Structure formats: C-alpha cells, structure tokens
Length: 105
Image (cartoon, rainbow, N blue to C red; front, side, top):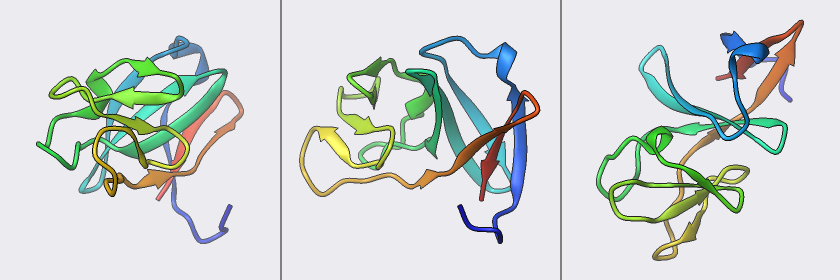
C-alpha cells in the first residue's frame, strides 16, 4: 500500500457482520465497503450501467450484485464478473488499525 494515501476511518470492525455492504461518503467519492470472507473491500458505489448503488446488493461468489439488473462486480478487482465484458468500477485499499476500518483514497 502506498504511503501517500489518505486513510479515512469508516467504522469499527465490531460494527460489521459478514456479508455487510455499506455506503460510505469520503469527500466527493461514494464508496461501498464490504466484509466478505473475513476481509474488507471497498469500491465505487455506483454501477457503471445505470448508476444504481452497488452497496445495496448482496455478495455472491466474491462479487457484489447490482440490484438494478443483476450484473456482479468482483470485490477484489472491480471487474464485471457477470454481465457484459469491459465494465469495471474503481477499488480502494482497506486496512484495519486498532479495531478501526480505514479506506485509503
């Protein structure tokens, strides 16, 4: 992880449940932060197809599903896992420090 990132706290680890996805605002960025398989992930919270909030969708096979049309986006890479190829959403690093979940932007 790059040292020049600005780390923003987004919640305490104890507040999250496995499979949670939450919308988070960091400056002008709308992100979704997810807990899946004991690991935290963060990605842009806007589906590139119709602008639907991805954090409202469920996690299926390591990807978040858009409730608008069923496409899924890989939590690690942001690439479309199910749907037309070529779509991707931005991902962001996440770390846990002293029980606090932080996203780097």
